[in-house]
Image 1: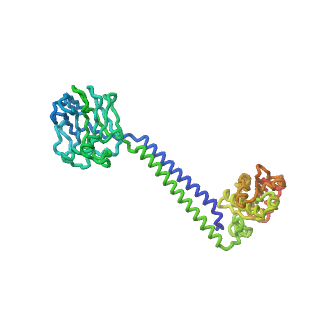
Image 2: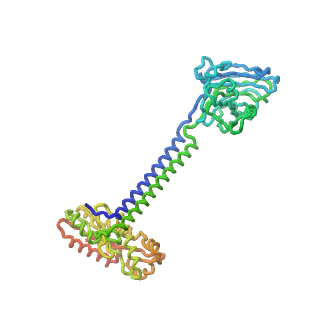
Image 3: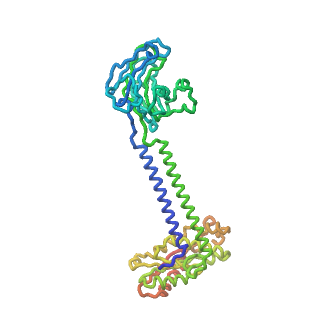
Length: 470
């Protein structure tokens, strides 16, 4: 069984945390795209209010109030009602129009004088729609035509209750005659005369479309006397299954949930790291692990070699030594410790679970990895070492060291480092050299180690910051 130190799990935890974060972002982004696509591509939902076989249609005029105006249906068809109004100035309020109510039962004929049985009247819930489309043809001199929607809270009203039903009013203008016009509900307003007539408080005067009992098409009382012809062709409630405001709320909820989960997960990770740090502080020193770098110690490496790798026929041995370490640390021992700690945290990112990392000397690390003759021919060990060397060179370790221990930049030592370290904008570049060797079946570990040390010696003598395999 492989010896695993808690700190060796850091790269795995970090990678899993990044994977979860990416998955959460992908889920949130995909959900947002699906919601927007559905909002844009879903067809409109439509509810035909007229013509249907479940409607009462009644013509009315001011003759009901003592006037002399006359209305009559000049055409009665399944998909068209034509109303002829003859207005006279015999009444203070000239009235002419058509009232359409909704029935619970199919009507044998489209036009009826009046729905006297209010239990047959059905309320239409239009709250989930955004407006209505009307197709009304008009011939005459009226400057506008009223469209009224009467709402009633009670579903089975009496005559008195029905007359008190809330009236919503919108107008059609001459340029909108003889074509299909969409009127959003925002353009309807509760009629002022209805508020005054019923003495309604403003809190009860808000628009409501939950129980629409009647749709009225009428001429205004200011219409001129004469003949007016109104053709009712179609009235349809129109809406969307998902409105823009609902889609926006959905997007906000998606990303809010994502932010909450992401935050909770990061808090969980912080708590776990805090607990592990406390546990490490309480734990007794383990002789198999190096106290400074938390990698395997020399003793730990030999233990792993004798107990876990003894039966392995082939191994890669990589020695990694920090270049010019004595020069870098001659004035500050703390800098050397920080460099060792940072490098020990960078190397595991490039190792598999078949490779062991340990501290072999003062500033030398060793990697032992299970391999195969095929991998040896393909120089897999050297490729891993070269990847680690390049990563360390680019990692800007000096910046973290300066920030962590609050010391001046180690560029003060760069004048003495002519081989592999250089000064660039007051920054010291830390480099390493690598020696690689391959242990075949039956070969003694000491012989392989001497070969790796020889390869490391060659790399150091040839200018450092390079990898050599033997």
